[in-house]
Image 1 (cartoon, rainbow, N blue to C red):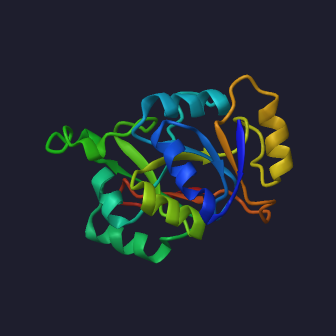
Image 2: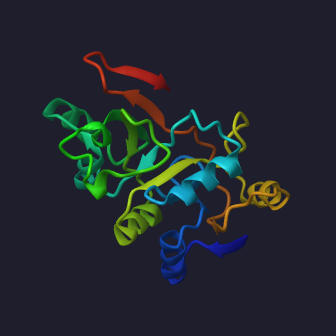
Image 3: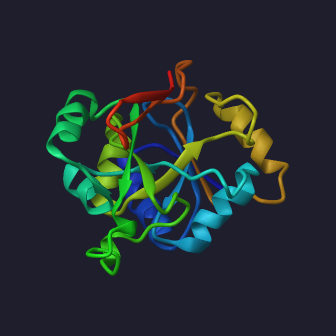
Length: 201
């Protein structure tokens, strides 16, 4: 488990790690998150092991922009209007996944792991370092808050390092941005039905 400071100098090493299937702990606009290449099955499985998360619980996905979101999810004009009001920001939206669409199922751009086959939870964050990383790595990133499943999210970097140093399953790389402000995880909104449903405030 390697620890790097959050800065431009380390960006290339972080990108290389993601491309090689590493699981990272990094800061976001909400809490510290566990992230990996959503198209790498082994990396996604490793997140589940590190977090001790049930496989039945899909992982949300960070995307670079609307173009990437539309490669993964079916987004109509009304949904796009709603997304435009909240993105980038602290809102995760559940949408119908293109992986189930027979017309695009073979499209490699829509192939991601750790998601529900029928739906996918997407978010464009508002955190410069993470947004820059998404642009440069040019891949959707599977993500979840840094904590053992069922326990509170973590914002204290020393506590994060201490908890995961003692585990058998560890992240490969921790990006140290110091302690983050006390924030809640993102709001989760389901847009898959005609009635908008808030799943987490």
